[in-house]
Length: 296
Ligand SMILES: Nc1ncnc2c1ncn2[C@@H]1O[C@H](COP(=O)(O)OP(=O)(O)OP(=O)(O)O)[C@@H](O)[C@H]1O
Image (tube, rainbow, N blue to C red):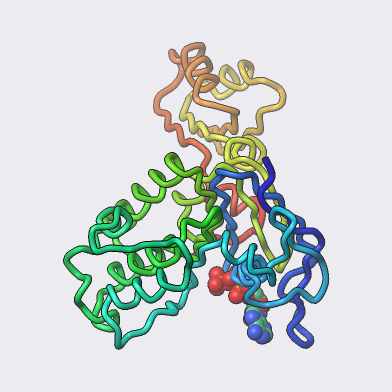
């Protein structure tokens, strides 16, 4: 089921076109990643989808509502790169004042969300004195208080250690399973986009690829098998014609679809192989192949 559709969205800031003619469809319950280098237009796209800024052209719709509609806003939760919480207030005051903005939302210090994100021991601390990881957990909790259908996370893991990232993702995955929460995130972390159900690769304000991780992998990130041999011609004679090969003297670098093909090939040529290495294609390769840049 389609939850959100964006058609031909464009955003110009004076002479600069930050987003050009982007089309997006987000299925309910999915984890969707926007992957792109610095300045690609990811945050601008999120700002458009959350109604924080208005598009220069194009339309955005969720269940028949536009971003400037109250019904649209009730269905989304947003965590921006820069926190919008009050530094002077305690964690509890920040969260409670947010909960009080919604009818029918009750929040207590024992609420599941508060315990799930590990906030119990910091509820009385002022937000301004929290560590980066603690702040991010509070930010996400605040965005989820009214049980939105769709959560936007703009670079949720930047600057966080692995433990904090794990806690956050365990809790979010639980909410996805229990409540069918849909998540749109922007990220530079390749492992985060590798977990996504669907990835939009964005560069220079445009979508340059839109697919599942598996399909992107097949198209842009073939696995590599490195073989060292004194008899390269024997190995070459066993390769499928569509496999790309780079030969440097006694070394062959072969791009093939998967590890099963690598095992089958190695089995056939094992008597002439002196050394081999196998590396599975990953999001890094996809990113490189599409943008020509390493992700930073
Ligand atoms: N308010 C603004 N005024 C002028 N230019 C802007 C504005 N906001 C964004 N831009 C420009 O639009 C382009 C896209 O920026 P955006 O922040 O969307 O990129 P991003 O992909 O989120 O980058 P990052 O990964 O560094 O956060 C950049 O060139 C940026 O300088």
